[in-house]
Amino acid sequence: MTNPEKIKASETRITKAVFPNTTNHYATLFGGTALQWMDEAAFITATRFCRQKMVTVCSDRIDFKTPIPAGTFVELVGEVVKVGNTSLTVRVTVFLERMYDEHREKAIEGLFTFVAIDEAMQPVPVRK
Ligand SMILES: CC(C)(COP(=O)(O)OP(=O)(O)OC[C@H]1O[C@@H](n2cnc3c(N)ncnc32)[C@H](O)[C@@H]1OP(=O)(O)O)[C@@H](O)C(=O)NCCC(=O)NCCS
Image (cartoon, rainbow, N blue to C red; front, side, top):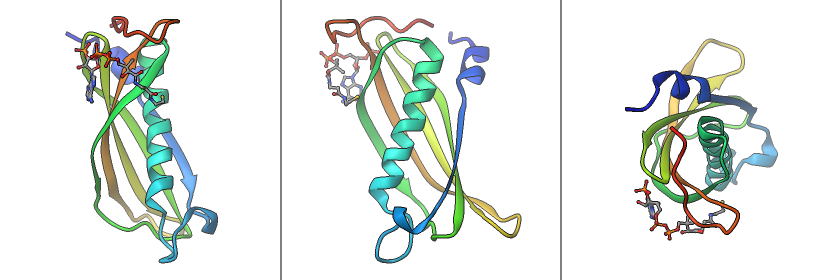
């Protein structure tokens, strides 16, 4: 059984402004940029959970539910959802938030799995 307090303490929130240097030719957030931000949020979450060296082994089932226009904020929320032997999985949810009203909605969701590694880059048990 994983310690729920550790899961709560490792929850990670990152807010970004969607400026034009992050968008595509439709003036919405470029998917590759979104994935980079999500992987970073997931990595921080995973590392905070176990304080070990981690590498991404898999990104899974990324759902882009709604386009994110330039001139909005996004908040990325990372949460550990599964702890294995040497691996753990983080769900990252990206919320779209308008700048000038209270509107906020879920825009992207995805799963990222990390493996704890030693100095020789070999898997080691995750500290639970
Ligand atoms: C991550 C890595 C060390 C794992 O080595 P490996 O020999 O495949 O390890 P194993 O087969 O023993 O699997 C280790 C764990 O990862 C999990 N795993 C492996 N491949 C996976 C995949 N594609 N999806 C989900 N989990 C996976 C296994 O289920 C296992 O989990 P568990 O111990 O919790 O049961 C190796 O694949 C690697 O170095 N990959 C490159 C990582 C990288 O460069 N990432 C990008 C930069 S951070």
